[in-house]
Length: 214
Image (cartoon, rainbow, N blue to C red; front, side, top):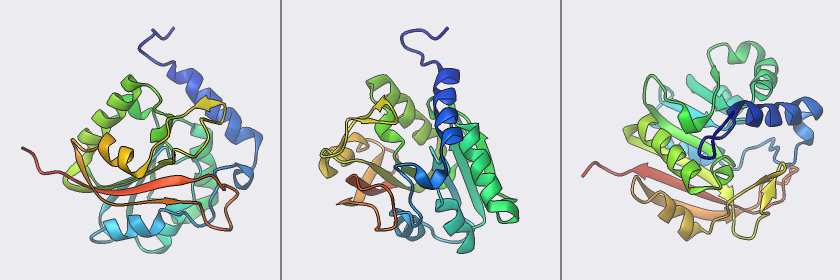
């Protein structure tokens, strides 16, 4: 049984598994056929060899677009094994080299650092200070010394719950401040997803570079 300070990871994973098993991916409220963060991720990469991690990847199509563009080292991390299985089935042979890891970011650590960290709609589920601290510890341990990050969260005009769970909301300024000890924000914008998305909720998207060590 989880303590007050330790989330029940098996329960949270089951929650997301049930969601992905119950509905088609395209019918989920957060689905994007063309990810709004795609161009920022591409801009963050220095080469097709860059190591990219999509955290809280779910069954996002971001990986499809990256593979089609020739990016070779993509890792997906998500609590839901069902979401990752849906992605694996969709990609088929195209995704043969994609590493898919069913894990919780709050206690996961990679074996090698990543050049680019991508997160669309995971950090806003870190609703408690402890969760946010754990997320940042993973980010710090995962990102290369000159690494870049693209992070998208609900804006302060967005909903306060998603998928039955509470979320934190941010302005462009508060998102930049949230990561300011580790990351320097180079770009931020409040957007609504593309017209072919089922998700019309406002997001704040930020692009970041890792700050040099003191």
